Image: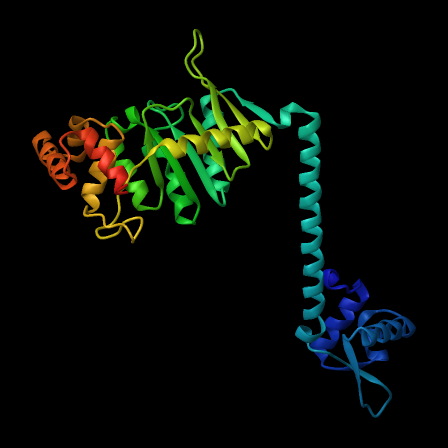
Length: 329
């Protein structure tokens, strides 16, 4: 058991006997261990040299007592743990070099094909559960793997500090329940933006792996097919695609009362008004906003008119232009 601390089998037995007895001479220890006195003497001499035991005065020759375990064995275990940690780091580095070499020589290590909805769903959850820094999403209308409401992995990842940047397609925001679902994610820390349309569904985790559906609707095909793309120029291109769409997308805002993105901006809108404005600028129809927020269409129109008066705008296009100029979003 104590081999990890550098003790041999006989030394461990001798040390345990000394701990229980308090002290002993060579003859007593040899008798208890069932070995010759010469062998017991050599073991005790080695243990004294390594700090496991010490000599104590005796009336009938030399006697030995154990050094306290935390003093004798503690530093050994610390050194052993450090050695293990260094070895683990070396193994991880070698493993990464091995994977990089395989990726250069074998395209299967760059792109893995996921042939079914179950395999795709498993990877979506795995990438989020193992993410450490950031997840980037293209969310198009009509789910392929699971509804957004079922993506509990995002909530757990946000809870442990993983950043989320999500771009929603306008049509998705018009689906029942999505406005409230997006608002909940934003309150938990998600950064959300919206665009008229997205070129593809996509998820990128920690800039090290991307998940892209390949075949969704084709004659005779009932299961979606996706690609898991690992570190490569293709992955870099997908990251660049996300960043370019992110720059063009409209921020969706839903903050606590009194909080705005930039304290230096004199934004006259409260949290509800900011959220309504961000949905309008994203192109979500007033009727859809009213339905999803549980408001009457007349109430939404009255609030939109209020925003237009604050901005001095005659049309919704002028309202969007004023909001952009004044950095309300």
